Amino acid sequence: MQLLPKDGTGNFRAVAGAISALAALYYQKLALKGYSLLLEDVETAFIEEVKRYAGWQSLTCQKSAAAPIEVDGKLVLEAFEWVIIESCVKANCDLIQASLVEASRSMGGDGFGMTVSEAEQAYEAEKEKMPKNAFVQPPFSFKTLGGQ
Image (cartoon, rainbow, N blue to C red):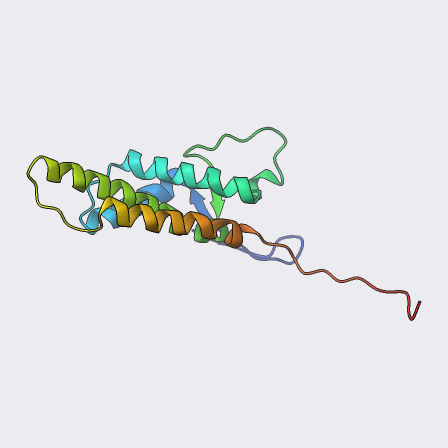
């Protein structure tokens, strides 16, 4: 993450980083928890959730773009975008993990963690929150013409 100085408008920015870098960090965190996901699974979940977010709010990188932007591992997210997207990424990864564990149970393995049903419910709940969290409108005011 990069914390940038004030820009020309007097605002501070924080850049979270490229999707591939964020996915790699998140993958390490999940691996420490015992998840059996691949890095590609985590990056795919990131890309899926960034696309979902873009359906509700434009990404900061779009505001200065002159050409179409591909949503891939090279796309850079601002910190506020990552904070909104993270809960859906987590729920998506939980669902993938639950599916893997359930599949291993069918082959005689021991199960642990959430069931697929629980993970699906949690994921749906997070997806429902995203539009509310993504909608950001700066405050505005207007003047009236006296008592007219």
